[in-house]
Image (cartoon, rainbow, N blue to C red):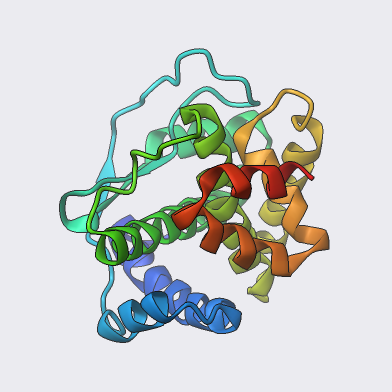
Length: 216
């Protein structure tokens, strides 16, 4: 694994840059409650924890059955399962891009944390329960949004290793679309960036309509 310094320090530095790109990325999203939340959280970064735990995803329908990261409600914290990220890199011959893969997971979970804060502040409820939509479909919506932002973050970086991880992730979306892998739904936004914002807003008020737009 190509890693020359402390993982915690690396992720801390990456997170500051990810936040900067996130604000640029979301500049086209004009929802008033979202903009208010972002203004209030301008300097905020989620607490990030590095875990050795390897969590197997039951009945996984994608290319990899280990959880790479997680965003939780308490403190809107982020967990990075770095041993699973190492396995991911080994499986897909990305050993030299380990740092970039870690950064991809961090960006993905950062988006989840911000999304959760907005959801709870705007609607005074947990981000998880939604009426009129199955857990599987909601998973497609939320994971596709977060994975697309992570892809955007990687692509915005001038480092070639980041671009390689981005292209690999895109290839997995393409390969596992037919398997209904929830992350594959991010392919939709590559051809229609505006749809990302439309679905993000609809997910709050009408998740069933958001899902129809996702698959249309």
